[in-house]
Length: 300
Image (cartoon, rainbow, N blue to C red; front, top):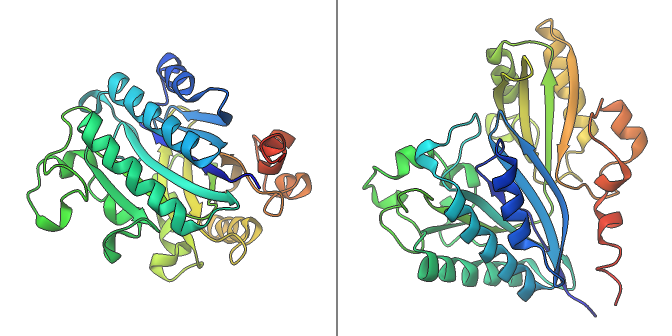
């Protein structure tokens, strides 16, 4: 039976549509299917989702990293989202007939090639981590490009390549992980401290909701503050639980929810049309459902 993996790389460009399109074009081909792409100018970040057979997905991921290194200069890039690389994060996700451990092996092979051919150093995270403390992406990315390019600390050195970063493309974090939900809730306020307070209250690392990562960021172009989140196990902590918790904390501070948004694709068991309405989701459509976009790929 056909093996299928998903790749959801994040690139440090969300304002120049031509750059994002050039990366999409580098990925696209008969061997893989580009499923979705979202860009955010405040985060200055784009997320591209594609899937296919493992060897083809790894090849497409390499092409995307190469194109990002060619077109994105981190010394001139800024945004509210932390980043260490032009191609910042490249996760490989098992979807069908492949294990997480096999995806970790794919991640390691991809990282070795990126260093060998592009001279961009690599950090491995989640199931691909070579050091226990690097399982969490936020640990790998702490301080961002600016901090990593000047440090000599042994515990901050890349897993492959280096020790210095690529002068304009930085480094890339490559991982193997389960399906993750990227979910943002926008608050009807410009006060970033409220979003930051709520993020601290709800995230797992502060004793909040299990499997929730959160940060508060400003959306200057929209006049809003945002609680930006990743849900690493939505079956333990579903979207509705997270939304209710953020709304309750916002109401305690006298703030309403302006809306929410999903980034990338969602499994059908995580989100449907009725729940999207409850979540005040601004960008939900039937094309947001992962299984619908994968239908042709999953045909043997």
